[in-house]
Length: 260
Image 1 (tube, helix red, strand yellow):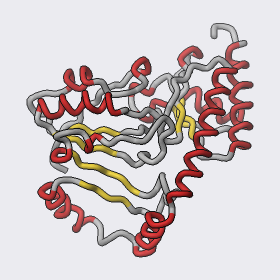
Image 2 (cartoon, rainbow, N blue to C red; image 1 turned 45 degrees about the vertical axis):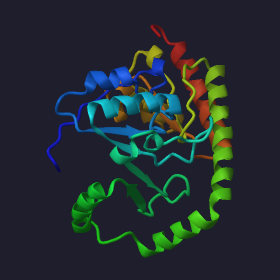
Image 3 (cartoon, rainbow, N blue to C red; image 1 turned 90 degrees about the horizontal axis):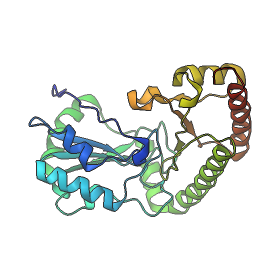
């Protein structure tokens, strides 16, 4: 709406799909105003720890830009507690934090989220927001109040269940010798399928047609996702077992084909 031009930073598997301060510095120009930082990440499941964020924060402050931090998966981390870049020294004044209820409280479709930012930024955001949306649904607001008051135990149980499924999938990938860096956030894994010599879309389409299992091609999330497959573990362990058995069968069939 402001006529800004997005600059894409292609993150790398060897860095566990984290944004490095070097990558950020290389992308920043005199016109740069805002860094969009979505961690824990969809589609990779990557997280940014305190050390990682401190380096990014130093660069952000040095270059005098703002950060929009999308932390919708913040409650779903499996390697220690989530850390927000807004908690870094000097970052509260230059961070727009985005969150909501769809992931942590399983309220997908309830259309309820929130933003936290310095007052002068929120004031300008409100000018646009009030002409685009009347208000959040009343039923969703009451549900959110209940979730915040009494939902912590449910979030903990869900996090433990997701973690079990995450570990199950990582073990299944190891058994079928399918490379996948270990994700510690959200509920996605991002295995590498480059060895098969086909695009992510071709792989996902054939997997769907031949084994009746749906997965998202990594290329749907940008050029750096090519050669990967996004698999969600927001399903029962029984369904994940069925899916991984079919994936193992599909991978074995591909490896037995000439030229693979």
